[in-house]
Image (cartoon, rainbow, N blue to C red; front, side, top):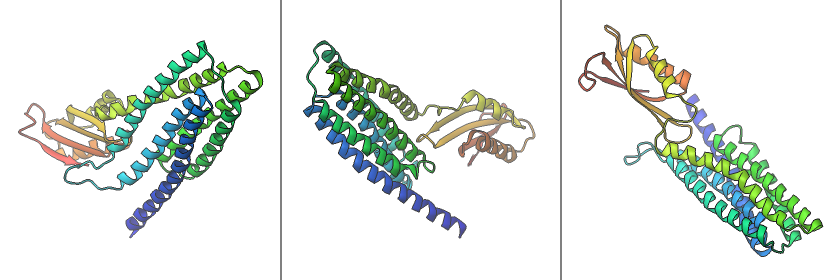
Length: 304
C-alpha cells in the first residue's frame, strides 16, 4: 500500500511540474518569436543575440518536458533502456544550433562596429522590458518545482540567466536613447554571446560524453577501481565500464577476480553496497571468477 501511495504521489509531482513547464514554455516561445521580429524591425543586434539565448530557454523547457513525459515511458523490446536518451540528443542539437547562431551574431557585430546602423532604441527598450516580465513570470512558475526536479532546476537557471540578458538589452537601449551611441547595441550583443557560449560549450561537452558512453562527470574511474579492489576477497578488477543513459542515470559493468576460498555471493554483495553507497551507482552488472581462471569459463553474474 505504501509503495502505491509513493508512486501516486510521484505522478502528481511530475504532473504539476509538467503543467508549470508547459505554461513557462508557452510564454517563453511567444516572446522568442516577438524578440526575433523586434530585432529585425528595430534593427537591434542585441535583441537578436538575446533571442538566441532565449532559444536556450525554450530548448531547456522542451528537454525538461521530454524528460518527464519520456521518463514515464517503460522500456520495450526494442529499447531496453527506455527513451531517456532523447533528452541528451535534444540538448546536443540545441548546443550545436547555438554555436551557429553565435557565429552569425559575432560576424554581424564586427560589421556594425565598422559601419554603425541606426537603431530604434524605444522599440528595443519596449521589447526587452516585455522579455524581463516574461522571464520573471517563468521564474515564478518554475520556482515551486526547482528543488524537487533536476530538470526543472535546469530550466529555472536558464530563465534566470536570460533575465540577465534582458537587463543588458534594457541598459543598452537607454544608453543608445540618451547618448546616440549605436555601437553599444553591438557591444551588448557580443556580451550576451560571450555569456552564453561557455555554458553552451559545457552542455555540448557533457552531452557528447554521454553519447560516447564516457565516464560520467564527477566520477573518477581510478578511484572506483581502487575502491573495488580494496573490498575484502577481491583479487583484481577488469572489463570495468561506467556510463550513463542520461545525465543522472549511471550504469556499471565489471569482472572481479576472487581470492581463493572466497564466497562469490558475499563478495558480490559487498561490491554492490560499495557502488551504491560511495558512488551512487544502483544499476550494476558484476561477474565473478576465480583468480587466474578464464572468465568465460567460470563466471556468475548478478544484476543490482
